[in-house]
Image (cartoon, rainbow over all chains, first blue to last red; front, side, top):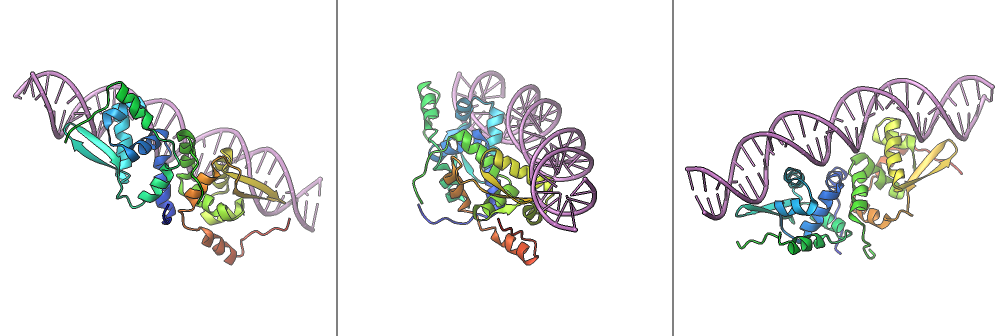
Length: 116
Length: 116
DNA sequence: TAAATATATAAGCAAATTATTATATAGTGA
DNA sequence: TCACTATATAATAATTTGCTTATATATTTA
């Protein structure tokens, strides 16, 4: 499980505040093991497109997620280069997988796959 | 380090939201290894008494801390019986000790000690 | 190039959060 | 019992958050 590194209180509070929202937290767990584009997340969380974009913006602003454009889609995933990535991972490791939400999408034929 | 237990997303988000405030987070870290009364926390965080009381109330409402009256003081500490205590501990274990704040108090002669 | 799709951003607003001020409750000790 | 200290709570004000609506930008495709 590796050695714990220390996260300053203020930095930790900033991260935890962002994760303290069930949509963002679930998204982070999903993005831990999947790349998703905005329109998939909109479907999954049954939220408006601007609402999802704004959540992603906050996560991106502190470097928790990164984006990669593939054609007209922008795929998000965890930013493994984040200073406190291991702190975040150890948190996410206590959460149940959110992958069944993607499986649902797949069933509905709404999963975006994209050859680079 | 023990086996990770799973915390439902909603429950985790609730806990993380509470910890996503630097005063509360620092207090939780302090209370992990110390019992403190309200007036000590007021000194330490340079906050008003109602403000500290309200933070403690929130933490107590979800069962993260517990209280014990000793004379005119009420001492708070982590509630080790919380359903997700191990989740909380694994979080706090990544944070730097806040004990020097108590040491400061001690120097100023403001530490409350109380024989039961 | 025009239409369609995906995403971002800005503005406005309602709900939630945090601090402040004022007051109530409880224990201590003269 | 009265004054004092510690704490909680209620009311209010200030701030922040998250959503919606409207619009802008970028990419694809006809």
